Amino acid sequence: MNVLFQLQRGDFTLDANFDLPDQGVTALYGRSGCGKTTLLRCMAGLEPRARGQLQIAGQLWQNGAHSIAVHQRALGYVFQEASLFPHLNVQDNLRYGWRRLPAKHRRVEWESTIQLLGLTPLLDRYPDQLSGGQRQRVALGRALLTSPDLLLMDEPLASLDSTSKADILPYLERLHRSLAIPVLYVSHSQEEVLRLADHLVLLEDGAVQAQGPVAEVMARLDLPLAHSPGAQALLTGVVMQQDEADHLTAVSCEGEVIWVSQLSQACGTGVRLSIAARDVAISREPTSNSSVLNCLPVRVDALQPDAQPGHVLVSLKLGGQTLLARITERSRRTLALQQGDAVHALVKGIAVH
Image 1 (cartoon, rainbow, N blue to C red):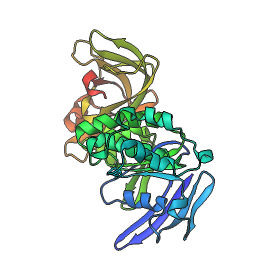
Image 2: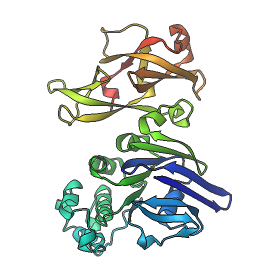
Image 3: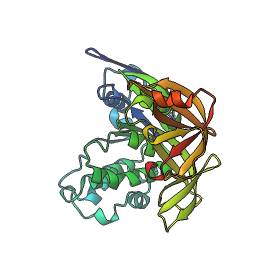
């Protein structure tokens, strides 16, 4: 479905046009002030001066200046703060959303939502008895129980500490695999995008700079993401072996084996692997007498000077997937790297997440 919105506010102009897949998680990514939250508010009908086009599940929510009211939009909205009702326990907070719909319109089941988000032990607690991550899980459950046709999530982990983020991320991953509705997830965290999103929309100064599958957009050398200090590439593979003695997992990716720190997924399960550009070294020859576990045959797809003086970004193809490597200009000269060269990518097992 196509999303198109325009809004003028002082010196800021929002002029965004992108495609939103019918299901899965689309990450809306960009620097603070680029218009991410404003765009979400437009989609929710909270910006009366916005002009645009939005059709969800066959219903026209916005057409030019004509916009249906917020309460007529079948959407769930999860904010940075959970905003639970303090006088209600978890069960009653959840029922607030559940009761909004007649039984015949409920497409999301109560029990499955409670189990999906691990809320059973929390039902009798009040918001002030919950951790930040637990409160966000309840807020997410409340939004889902309205049976939305669209779920908007505005940096739901931004206000959480690292412990609370670690608590909720596995539930969001589980949600990502289970939902059959489109989710638009606003974030400025590459880690969250890599773990949760299928599709990525990169927003810059109110306009869409790029969009597409996460792995493709993250690895494009013509975009700022690949040049950021924490630049990462995303690989997908299948768990093929668990080495319990060494606490390692073997993942099959493009016909190669990548050893990583032990994963919880069972053999045969699809997984995502994120690898930082700074953790990838390049060798002309395969190495075996080394502490580095992974020596992958790759092809140099592109090279580009990095923002950091004396550094070069190298795009490496592993089959049909892309790795990034950040190396020095001296190393590039020493190896005489050129586009099309067959080389080896060296990656520590502990550097793969």
